[in-house]
Length: 232
Image 1: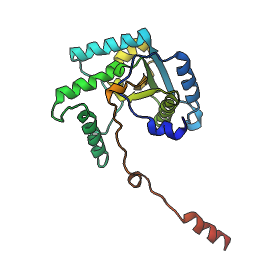
Image 2 (image 1 turned 45 degrees about the horizontal axis):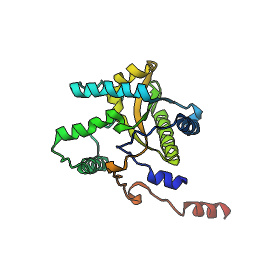
Image 3 (image 1 turned 90 degrees about the horizontal axis):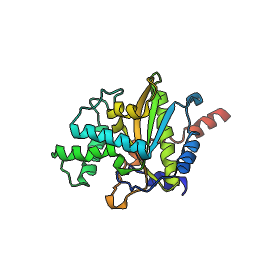
Image 4 (image 1 turned 30 degrees about the horizontal axis):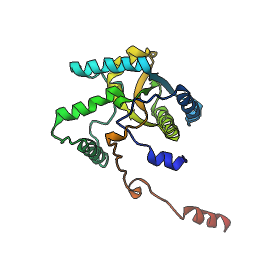
């Protein structure tokens, strides 16, 4: 699989089989992902990988909280601005309509939407999960580094025939994750990531993207002009 195919076939899969993901595959992916770029090479990511019994225990604890209707944990970072302006608000709304529409859930059916969202804490059935932390003393540039690391992980997983789903939702249960992982106190849970083989019966539709001219501006001709001036 070439890099273009990996990029265009990557999507947030929300339905996995229970097929085992070999540890050696995960080790190879994460060893290569360590080459992701980071400012001054500080490599600010801290990843924990759960499989088998430990992952089952985490799913069990999270599921118990969902069933009990426990409130989410106090947030350690802001996932979205309180007032998401245009065009980001419209894009987020369109995603929600497509995501829940594919499941036959109307915008007004809040209970059904909550039930669908609760699948996050079962990792959508995935047999492996990664939890990515960052030191709470680091800033926006280092958070961007973590994003590049996670994207690298997801593309390498595609190269091995695997799929993934990055999940900020796990940050809402960061205390439960910490009960299983026991991370140092100076780390913040950024997100989880479900990893496995796609369950083709789940109908994992891919959300669209904005047209290129909406997000990219080409500035052309400037170099030629400056070069001409420099030579005159």
